[in-house]
Length: 375
Picture (spheres, rainbow, N blue to C red):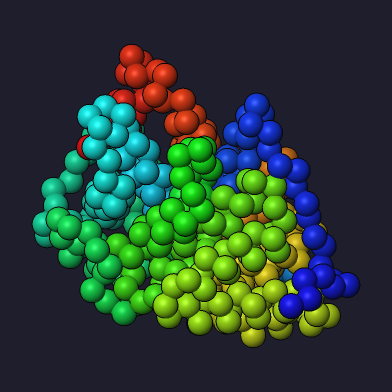
């Protein structure tokens, strides 16, 4: 496949030297996702026609009132933060008592998120310890996906692939922390593990292969972008891994079409319409990949990602994750960052995902053990 074209701006981000602190890219990944989530959250259930009618011919370009204010995040960012917490608590448990179960730790983190939504799991009690659960602003219901709620209510003591056939985007939209986490610990892992843990996080609620293979792809994209690959190069790595798994055709077809459309002169809104509305995982990922490929700026990419018929907050969030890693925090408009809900919490979680690589050397300090208890 030809991977260049007249409309495609290929960005080569220099590889991050091992002696350089990449905290900014980590923070930009999660803040970028949250900004896209908050911008799209106000128009999530609106058609493109309705969005343009309300906000003008450019669509929504600044936060609008939603959930009682401006810059309010949705369940997408909430669950992204709890994904990060689950991974970090698994690592902490391994460092403190030598046992690590990432699937159980992430499952417990999602049960804590479920409790913030006023729901409860039938088989697992809520462990309210740790820093994240204490953030009162997270205890707010922001149009959570029904599949996530129902699957997590029924999640038993042995995590496995959810007993449903859902391929909703609620699995893929929350897994950017997997790529961040394993890049910090890259000497201890390989790219297959990154893909499989991305899938694992999604399988806890989504049982259709397209519902969780897309999550593996996104985790790998984040990881390889940190390695300094262009998005096109990272996509090739991810697609090769994807091809090793059965029932990958739907996701692969959607990704290939996003790449093809990014190299055409088709108007962006028409290309996005062809890729779908984003309610299902392969469409959400394809729309986000397309927007990240064609974007000439962070702002343009996010505006494209939310002004369409469909799941605007999820496509905005995923696009923001990708562009954040690619461009850094300076690329995110300050007018989006300043009112962003839970900005400081998001920044701290992102910083912790990078700092965790050194936890083994600071186990006498109770700060991280109290923040992410190994349970």
